[in-house]
Amino acid sequence: MISFANILTAVFAVGGIGLLLGIGLSFADRKIIPATDYTDSITDRLPGINCGACGYAGCTGLAQAISGGTASISDCPLLKDEEPNSQTTAFIACNGHLSVSPPKFEYQGEKSCHAAALIGGGHKQCIYGCLGNGSCTLACPEDAIKTTDGIARINSSLCTSCGKCLKSCPRNLIKLIHTKSTAVRCSGNDDAKKTRTICKSGCVACKLCIKVCKNGAINIKNNLAEIDEKYCESCGHCEVACPFNTITTLPIV
Image 1 (cartoon, rainbow, N blue to C red):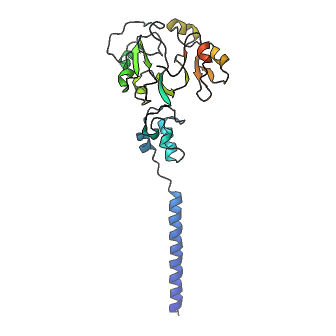
Image 2 (cartoon, rainbow, N blue to C red):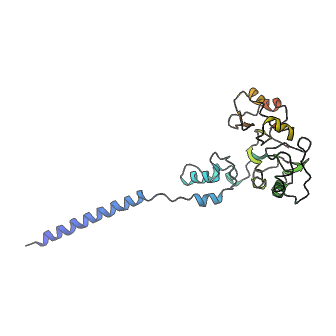
Image 3 (cartoon, helix red, strand yellow):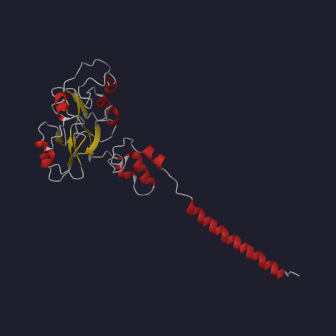
């Protein structure tokens, strides 16, 4: 015959096992369920211009890092302290004004760079250059961009790096760079002979800038000089060496 004491012991044993299993499952649940991914909601808070100034692969890359706990919203130079970033400025990678890069035909359509780009690939001989129709000028809330002699120019002392002009350019010529950078005012990839026929201020990949750069900050890629801000000290030697006035040292006013 089973005694009451044996029944009571069995009940406590089963209850204890159940309690231990419950605690174990609760702990496992916390460990197994992955952390919530807030990438999409964080991306919505970022500017969306994918400038890469934060050091990540665009705004989505930064959002993923923030969601994973390895970065913060302040890593975005446009949102840091929710104030305009005084360390960066918008820059137009083109110096093809009319005196060095005349148009192939007269454009008489809507004053829009996007509209002009649809007509025969644009009215400029250079398919990479600024169309000069002022779309970025209209997009700038600080009146920091002026279009003169067929090309847009940014006054870096007025620019607040809001990024609104970046999307206004159909040729993606505008980017955010450090306010004291040295930069190449060209985006062309043609060889030297063709470049000289369409723009007297275009980069011809002559490598003179490379020869005078003591920090190895300049490389040639697709017939175009590229300056790495991480190594550039803005000494100005490459600007002086460039025979075509293609390289400039900021600030530009």
